[in-house]
Amino acid sequence: MEQKAKTQDEGMRIVRILSKDIEGEMKIYPGLTKIKGISWSFSNAICNILNIDKNKKIGALTNEEVSKISEFVKNPKLPEFLMNRRMDFETGENKHLNGFDLDLQKEFDIKRLKKIKSYKGYRHMSGLTLRGQRTRGNFRRNKMKSVGIKKKGKKDEKRT
Image (cartoon, rainbow, N blue to C red; front, side):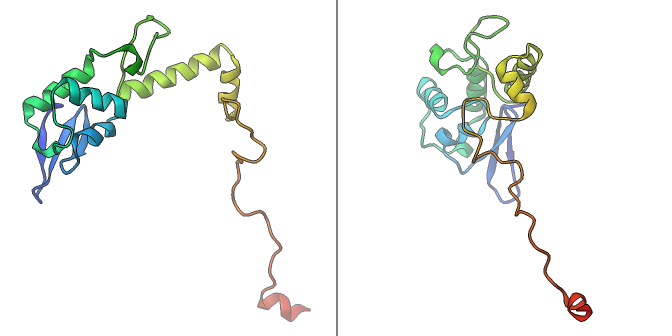
């Protein structure tokens, strides 16, 4: 279901990998980075480990290669520094999340920070920056033009 390759009317092939449609005209190396949770280094590792040419177009992939890529992304056998969820808070394992799982886990982490009322949790609650940026000049809420003087119209000129 996830590894299907669709064809559009124009003849351009769209490949679906891990519930993300990728245009067939893209090369594999930058195309895999369109999937949420796959970085450039992870994409490079996928191409090297599975012996796939980086300059090959995604539309030219066979269904077997697409299924290989999706299986590898689900269960990667890579060094720890390429994982995006090292030392998970609940389990202590090194995981690699992608797609909706990554969004959900990020949301849970923010909720946990708010619940324990840590410094980062307070900053999240108040909508401020978390990592020590200065907020005097940047991160202004209302970037609209400030209230100016009302211009006189034709009706106002006749009254005076």
